[in-house]
Image 1: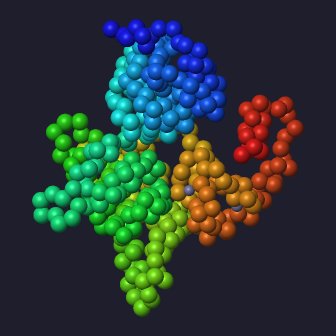
Image 2: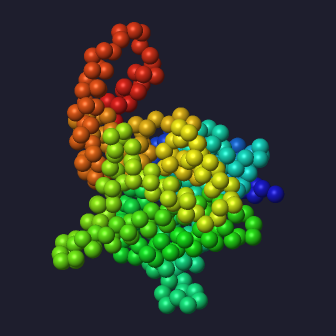
Image 3: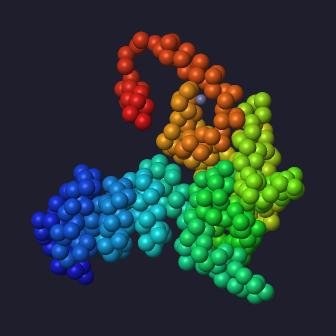
Amino acid sequence: MPDESKNSQLDEIQQQLIDRIAKNDTNGFKQLLGQLKGGVNFVDDSGMSILAHASFKGNREAVQLLLDMGADINLNQHGADYTPLHFGALSGNTHVCRLLLDAGINPNSINSVSRTASQMAAFVGNHACVETINNYVTCKSLEYYTQVHGQQTEPHIPPALLKPFHTFVTEINLHPVRITLNAQNLGFLKILPNLRKALVLMCEKEMQKTHDINELLAFKYHYQGWIVGELIRCDEQFKAQHKDKSEDATKNDFVEVFIKRVLKENKLNQLDYVEFTVRECVREFPFRECTVFRQIATQLGSKDAASALVILRNAINGMRGFVDENSYCSTCGQEKPDKKCSKCKAVQYCDRECQRLHWFMHKKSCPRLLAAVLAGAQQQPKGPIDTSELREELSKLSA
Ligand SMILES: [Zn+2]
Ligand SMILES: [Zn+2]
């Protein structure tokens, strides 16, 4: 039985809050929120909660505020059984999906047409949302690795690093540079062997489950652990080469060496080291009977195979269909980066750090790319204006 008091007519403030969310007027929404009486768990005439509205608009700030104020993730009375995660998945905003997942929403809930949130996201082409949901595990499920078991004298992951470990594990970007930068930014550089061990155990535990084995996640953990292992190897080589220098002078420099090793292109603009190490990583996967292993191995062996990293990404996260390579950071593979090379404007980066790390390669191609861009501008045909092209140009100008 729905609670009649919740389903009754909205008061003035409630109605205005929903209107403001619908217009994505976040400031107006925040101002009004203080005047709300009786909490944030109410639904509109159609049975949609205000959290569902905010999720549907992909409004990260409003979703966070509502969750902080005790919004019920399970409140819905609209009959189609869409959870706020279904709405968030439709909005395409990965942050909103992530907030709802962290709040404990069940990603396996199905709507009235038997689709999960991830399936709805796939249906409308929101691939990053699909990956965010499919790569998600709860923070609680990782507590095991912050505890002492059996012969251990200390846990693999210090309890204080549980949240950073959760962030590391649920990352959807599988580029080796992103994994490396995450390890650095999340505070794992001093305990890389522990991080590696925890990932190896996670892979094993996933494959030893008695039901609902997720081979894709097992393979992903194996891969993340492999890249961490490569980083450790680089650290050891670096230390051996710089034995006589003081510890402080060489601090973290192995990260830089490793990233350059990853980004070094051969004459055909291919990443030799990445190709080699990803193939080695696949060969070393211990569970050779599972479907994902056989699928990847077959694809790696086929003629005209894509790069090993692309094959691995597609196997773990699914094909993305048409992919515009220009919408990724040239250093770490992050989607929709904010910055461009200011000279050629042909390559994109997350931030100054990513640009700096890539410059040793990009400085060779930057003049050539700039020349190509200028030549393209001169040769533009004077045909009828294509509106989609125009829109793209305008968005570039405002970026
Ligand atoms: Zn980047
Ligand atoms: Zn450039």
